[in-house]
Image 1 (cartoon, protein in one colour):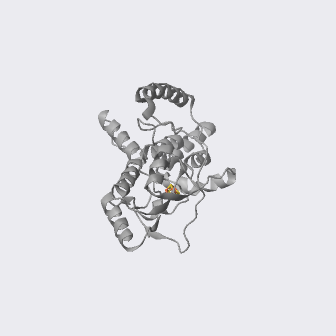
Image 2 (cartoon, rainbow, N blue to C red; image 1 turned 90 degrees about the horizontal axis):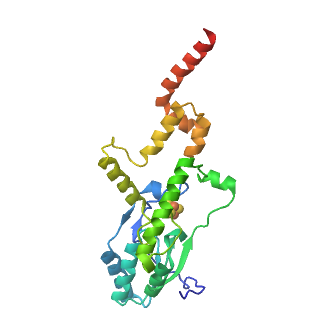
Length: 259
Ligand code: SF4
């Protein structure tokens, strides 16, 4: 890599959108709430860049995508197309550090990438709680499954060889790069179908867990904190269907004591 300190040129740059929205799930972010994630085609984006190059000498492009490197293959394709057309421009973008790797940065830099913006996670527990980030304790069985998974992936990494890049992900693509949320959700749905289970989405597991927890008498405050709801009223409102069962059980418990 050959990065240097770089600032926007005087006068700014030319804003451009390659995608809108964001498929990630940061609770504090408006992008995921206000619009679905959608992308322009690579040809369409680079056509616009080419027209800009025809009108302006060496333009500086500011990609306004909320998460520019969400899809690694797409970014590589974009860089390749910029270079194939020989466009003389530079650009910046916003992204997340866990959506970057050295090979991708090299590719971006070769295409003209000169600056990036990214968020930094707070380490303050109060701030983390306010933004819906919280540690979730794992049951011992899950830890054993994760250890077995690590052993399996180590073997697969050796088979992939030098093409594998370790980004520290527990679950990843064969080359070590990240899995997009959509891939995980679709894989889950396929498994549900394969085993002929009742149709359930990945997100539905969350509701299943909460319903079972409340039915088993786990205190709503604990369920609220595990789900990351900001107030207990939200938890009780969403899972109000569990209340009749709880009322019946409470009535029975008191009856057992009194009678
Ligand atoms: S990754 Fe960035 S843009 Fe996407 S939801 Fe999180 S904060 Fe928002």
